[in-house]
Length: 403
Image (cartoon, rainbow, N blue to C red; front, side, top):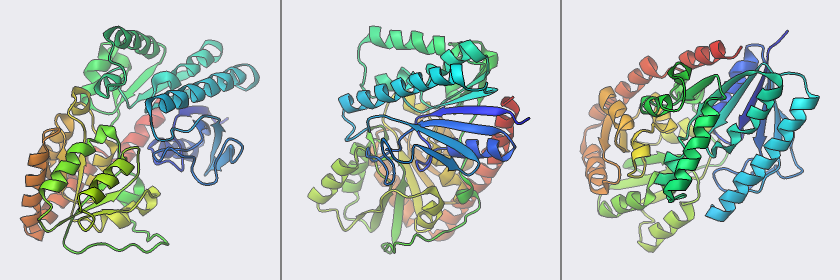
């Protein structure tokens, strides 16, 4: 009989998250997989086309069954709207979990894909009380550290309370997966170290295979040196300092390409327009991951950034592995583990979080290198990725954990 797996996640297809691939891996290996998720509204904040409170709530994603529970969308991303978004989804998962606990057959393994908030890890503990499944928490957002870094909670007592809750959650799970080596130290303080496993990100097959699919819409790209950012355009990505770097290079022959969406995009676009940088900065919207190699192919180099906060120096953004697999030189405005990976791979340059002047100077210097030199960096990136972040290794690890 096939083993039954229940996955809790805030985000699932058509939203681009690694949990999509994990679910497909498990189903492809003969597991019966049910995904509990919300109505897709990330990163724009609005429900994706074709989805709503009463539309497309039950679906199939390949061999994976998907249940979409009601929630209030993130909207413009104000603190109040985010709290409502979090709470409505938490209430939905809580009610549905109680239903599963009493009226459905037992799931052998539960996987919780925690991006944010940590509330998603609580309802499965109720199910655990009744059914005793194997419990896996895939922790990608280290609370309460992120809350403190983003200024969402400033009270020391409130942060301590969240830390107590997170420690309680950790001790209710059998396995804790963390995406960076820096997180292991923090996780070890919360529970038995034997539970903690390093589980870094990988690139989707589209990047690994370099399978370039052309979107139906025709896009035009500028000629010259194109530095590209792909992913969420949000507060954590420090677009205030990205804008300052662009402004510093406004007289240089450098084009900035942005592929993605997010709560800070409208603000960022307005800043670009008001500063007369329209001829240097180009926006291409958000796209299915299968089309991303097409956009990456137009880039001379790829960059990413995170805010100058301790928690972000411990973070390795998922886009870094996708960048590396694409075989392009990389610039990161990031300290800590992400910078170490770039430096060890010899695939580009890393400057400190928030150091927009160094970011600008580094990109300018990279633009002046000959193409052969940049191609060597790109090859180094791909080689390092294949040696350290292969999806095959991650797949085998998750299959061993899912009983």
